[in-house]
Image 1 (cartoon, rainbow, N blue to C red):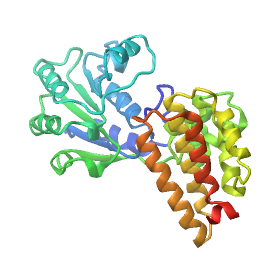
Image 2 (image 1 turned 90 degrees about the vertical axis):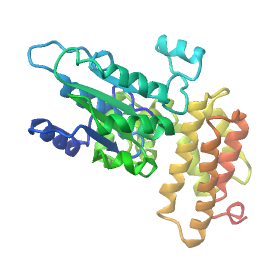
Image 3 (image 1 turned 120 degrees about the horizontal axis):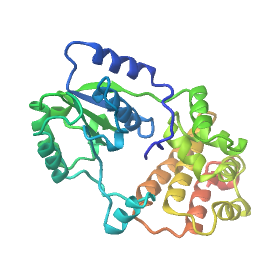
Image 4 (image 1 turned 180 degrees about the vertical axis):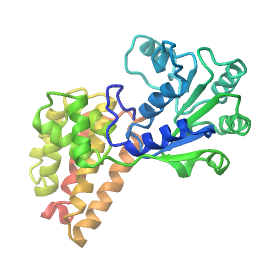
Length: 326
């Protein structure tokens, strides 16, 4: 998940204080881990922090994405067709990992001096997507960083990163936003959102502005309402499951399907708080099944109508009805 470029930096005051205090110090550490769940805005923070780092007084600075002293490593487009979509400014699919060739190309560029000032920044988005050989190559740069070079490693799962990498970095933690902060982020990024979609986006995001904004852009407010009805009352006559297909549309793309699965999962998480011991077992089973679906969705070619029937059946199974009991 990528936080949209227009997502505001709300709720991350502590990381900013830490970063700016370090910049004002005499010896700033050369490598930083920006750690927290996906969608919190860590990559956006990295771009803005890098721009502050490399800026020189009196010298006009280009935007971070085109700055000659800010290098960003992220998974490349999956193939030539996806690369063309990227060039055209369209959504595109990426490879799963950042390759060792990308890291080595970055290291070759670090041999020269910074272009516009005394500092440059390398952003790895995300470090837990590095190939094993790419991790080993990056380690050399972290052990002996070139003069004036600073690394910002975005990481969604800190435990997936090798101790040899973690030990050479300062960890900056990003936490989920509270409800008021999340509402402000949604209102700033998606003004004019209808009330049902806005409420659903905030409810299912789990404190993640990226998840909330991505959900809002998918316009799944009606789907969220149907999911909540399924959990509350079941679906003995399959009417709600039938309505789901209409709410999703005839040909929902993969992103919309993934957003719907995540929405259903968060509806179960919300329902878990109010359930009794018996219903919690059913919720846990349904949640595990949705997690499996989410893992399969990026590569499986699901029939959208059958996928909605499957999700609807899982949600209906937790209701306090005869259907849920079985």
